[in-house]
Image 1 (cartoon, rainbow, N blue to C red):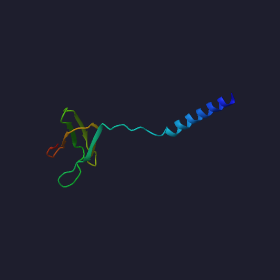
Image 2 (spheres, helix red, strand yellow):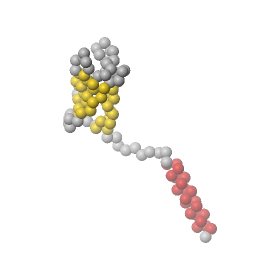
Image 3 (cartoon, rainbow, N blue to C red):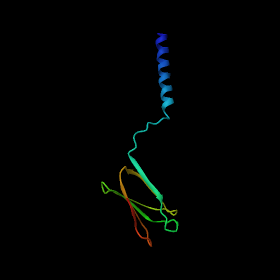
Image 4 (cartoon, rainbow, N blue to C red):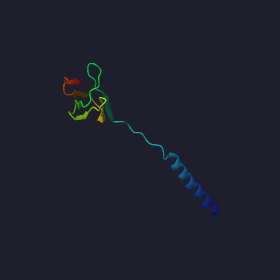
Length: 99
C-alpha cells in the first residue's frame, strides 16, 4: 500500500515538473502573413509625413490603406502572402505606384 502511494506521488510530481518546464515554451506554426513597411521620401531625400500608402493584392483586389507618420514611416502588418501593387499619394507630390 505504501509503495502504491509513493508511486502515485512520484508520478504526480513528475507530471507537475514536466508541465512547469514546458509552460514557458510556445509552439510555432507556419507563418501565413507578411508585412510591408518603409519610409516615404521625396526626390531630395526629405521624409513625407501624412502620405497615403495603399497596397492592393493583385490576385484578389483586397486593398489595405495606411498613412505615414511624422517621420515618413509606414507599416502594413498581417497581409496575406501574395503579390501587391503599392501606391503612395500626398498633396503637392506626383502619385507613385509600384508592383
